[in-house]
Amino acid sequence: MKEMLMRYCLNATALLAAALLAGCANVVYEGRLSWKEGWREGWVTDVGKGAAIAGKLAEDCKLVPLMRSEGVQYVTIRYWRSGRATLRTVPTTADSHWNVKDLVYLNPRDCNAPVERRAS
Image (tube, rainbow, N blue to C red; front, side, top):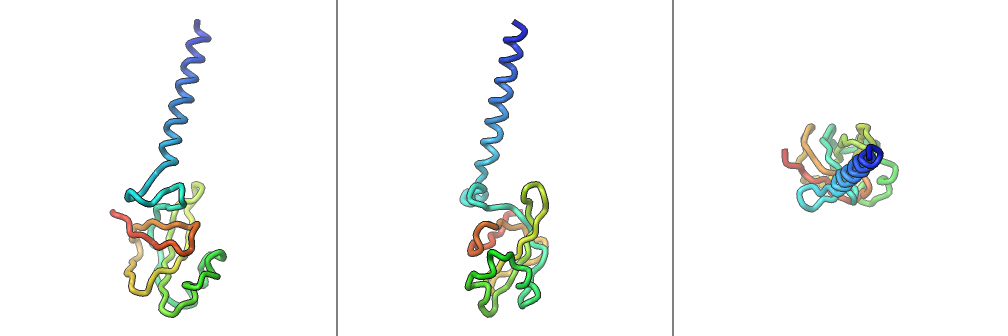
């Protein structure tokens, strides 16, 4: 009887843990930006134009045509990846207005994905 009760508790705990993990993996920010598709929360740590900040671009983004256009503004964003804070510099349009500490969403998997402003 004791062994049966223990097995029941272990099964119930495993089922509860699986349900919680499945819920976490299905996060959708702002009702449209899916965590599964690569969107992450972050904050702006640097904003600028020119070669100095463009040099910080991730290698996988340096070949995208927008990166070489005149007037491109770059933002460096800190976000969490695998439990560690990570920096990613991405291009934004010249007419966008970003400040250090702005809360954002970014998709580090897609160099063409826009940086999205996050509600505070």
